[in-house]
Image 1 (cartoon, rainbow, N blue to C red):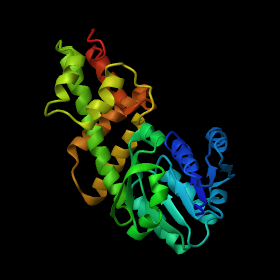
Image 2 (tube, rainbow, N blue to C red):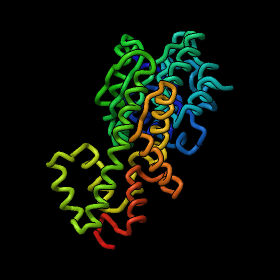
Image 3 (tube, rainbow, N blue to C red):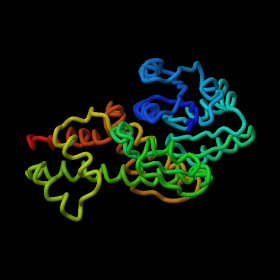
Image 4 (cartoon, helix red, strand yellow):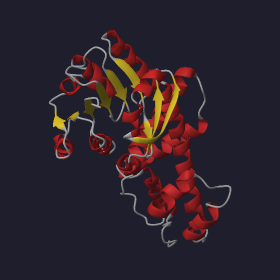
Length: 302
């Protein structure tokens, strides 16, 4: 059975391994990114290179975009040399970026005008899950379209959820990011507090992970990040969390919903970014607190 020809746009930390997994699953890919270096890497695994988003979309049955934010998605899809300038009628555009729900609806509306179908399908799990093909994929749009392309999704993800109409994928992803951002700050504050008061960080971890304060991020960030003091490992960049929290605040503003904790978390991550931590893992917000308090979680030394 012949597999769909895919145009893949956006070969960053997440898009690059996702594209490789599609190639490994036997999907022919034409790829494009503003940065030529990842294109070379993916070509080495069997992809073809395009010179623009429009070229990547040309003759593709499915076009996937995996880009940092709303402006990049609008430029790559709606702008000059964009996807809609090259896509054929009946093609499917799957935007797997994490962007505002209203931006997804705008892109879907513009795509429909030229006969291009649309799904918003943001992902969760970070770089490790992208590399392992075990992402959680949160899909908004026509359920029949998802069912039609479930094999393609399964080449990139393990847990695939249909959550409603266009924009609902982004909405549910945004909710996840609100919880993850607030939880990461709570972990940072709690471990810095405990360490400052003289508790052993390793002991704190062992106790919390079997107590009411446990969470997914306790295991995902404490052993390999906080306790090692190494926040440079691939995971989920602090600036991306800042962007996602900003999307939640923007959506809340439009709908007049108060977000007290989310607003506080946004300011926290914004300060950490201004300190130069934006490219590090989001758990590097701990470094900001460590500096302020004068303690290192990984050693307990002042």
